[in-house]
Each structure stands twice: as structure tokens, then as C-alpha cells.
Amino acid sequence: MSDAGIIEEILRLKKERRAIIIAHNYQREEVQEIADFTGDSLELSRTASTIDCSVIVFCGVNFMAESASILSPEKTVLLPELGACCPMADLIRVSGPRKPWESYPGYKEQPKLIFPIDYSLNDIKKAYPGVPVVAYVNTTAEIKANVDICCTSANVVKVIESIPGDEVICVPDKNLSMWAQKNTKKKVIAWDGFCHVHDRIRREDALRAREEHPNALLMAHPECRLEVLEVADHVTSTSGMLRYAKSSPHNEFIVGTETGLMYRLKKENPGKIFHPLRKDMVCPNMKKTTLQSVLRALKENVNVVKVPEDIRVPAKRALDRMLAL
Ligand code: 13P
Ligand code: SF4
Image 1 (tube, protein in one colour):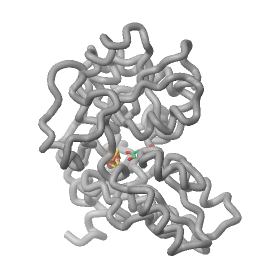
Image 2 (cartoon, protein in one colour; image 1 turned 120 degrees about the vertical axis):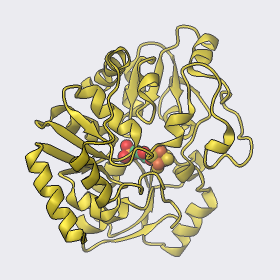
Image 3 (cartoon, helix red, strand yellow; image 1 turned 180 degrees about the horizontal axis):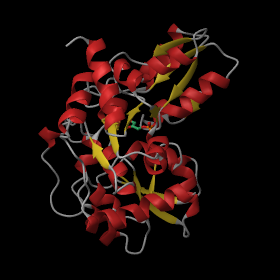
């Protein structure tokens, strides 16, 4: 079937099944193009909870579809590619041993430890009894069910500031945690996880990009290393970058996040110029979803993501606390 034929069939099935398609800002261009909503993790969680429909086709990675299922248990949530995961989200466990290094892209050598990555969430809690735990939304439903509150890259500092006490545990992204630490007076206890797409960028890459494009402003995602964030003009979530680029009087930008965001940046700002910070900032899991997989999920009702009630209810509490802010 041609792409036009696939799109026609998707639109027909969408109507028939009262379905809505939502896509993360990193998705393939053609997938973003057929989506009813595109956005960052926070926007997509909100959309999933407020939208009136029977089926949500979530074009993103598994923790995002789980969040949609947690917030909208009465809706059928479909993840077009079941193998679309976030290695950082999948690495941290509530208890028991972590997955082997080989299953985690980016871990070529033993990382520098902040809070030992061999520790499960329960081990960390035991080491810091009574200290509240914030989980980045890039975590499994099971982790969310065992923490006090969730956060996204857009609201991590606000979430940390909203919690009583002087200390907070923040999992799983050490870079996001260190960025938060720089912006709050509270003590942030970080775990040693990271996103292999953002963590590969070094300060030299940022300085080189600045040299190559001296008139451009550098926007960076807080999943990048602190050494990169320190030389950026603006640190924000993917949708934060869209807002910043649109409202800024500047017309040239270096984009320090996954290259999928370039599509919306260029589309929504036709007169402006965007350069990727590094061309290999590509998340293979975000690229797994295709028009064909969207069609298949809708047609055959496969790849249903349903979080069991005993996990969903406590996980929803953590997400609701964040959304209430
Ligand atoms: P945003 O919340 O900024 O969209 O980021 C999600 C993500 O997975 C970043 O790698
Ligand atoms: Fe996970 Fe990184 Fe991909 Fe985002 S870009 S989904 S954090 S691996």
C-alpha cells in the first residue's frame, strides 16, 4: 500500500474507533504529520488524561503509553511498536538486580558512580530512610507506583521545590538530577542512570557547534551533561525549545536534543535556521514507529498497553501530584 493509502486507512479507522493519535516530538516526520497532538512528555500526559475518545494510539516509547494507561484506564491505549522502549527508564528496578550492561546502549564501560547503579529503588530508600523520592516520567509504571511524585524535564525544579524537607532522591537520570541540583538549594541525591542519546554529547561538541555557528543560540535538553548545559543559552524540555525558538528575536539556533524535534522547529519557524548540536542525536526507539505500525495497531487492536490496577492506582497518585502543580 502507498503512504497515501495507509494514511487514508488510518484516518478511516480513527473515526470508526473514536481514536486519537498522539506523538512525541521525536517521532518520524510522517508520524508527527498524522498525529492529532504532538508534544513533550508533560503535554502528552495531560492530553492523554483530558481527551474524549475510546482509543489512544501513543506514538512514543513504552513508559509514555503506560502513563496514558495510568491516567485513562477506561481507554484502550495502543503502542504501535511494542519494542519501542527507553533504556534509561527500563534500567532502574524497584528491587532485585539490574539488567546486564549489554542490554543498555551507551554503557560501554563502567560509569562513574554517583549513587551506585547496582542499587534498586528499595536499596536507595533504605540508605536514605524517609527522604522523599521524585521519579522522572521516564520510568516504568512500577517505579512510579513506589515514589512520592513524578516530574518531567519541564518541571523538575518546581516539583523538587514543592516537596517538604531539605533532601530529595531523584531517579533515574543523573544529568537531570544534577541540573536540578544546580537550580535548587535542596540536596538532590542522584542515581546513576542516563539517556544514551543526550549523554554522548560533550562540552567540546557544544563549543565546536558554537564556533561553527557563531550567531546561533544554543538550546539544550536537561538530559545532557551539566558540562553541556553550562555552555547553553537555554535549558528546557522539547516543547520548551519550540516555545523559546518561536518567541526569541534570534533567527538561528543549535538544537541540543534528539533530531526529531528539528521537524517541528523548522515547520513552525519557516524563516529561522536550526542546526543539530550533533547529527547522531537519534533515539532508535523513538524511530521504531512507522505509518505501517500505526495502521496495524489500529486495525488489529494489537499492542494494547494496560497497567494492572494494583500498580496503576499508586502510580497515578505520583503522576496526579505532579499534574496538580
Ligand atoms: P521531553 O519531556 O522534553 O519531551 O523529553 C522526553 C525524552 O524522552 C527526552 O529524551
Ligand atoms: Fe529514552 Fe533518551 Fe530515547 Fe528519550 S531520547 S526516549 S530518554 S533513550
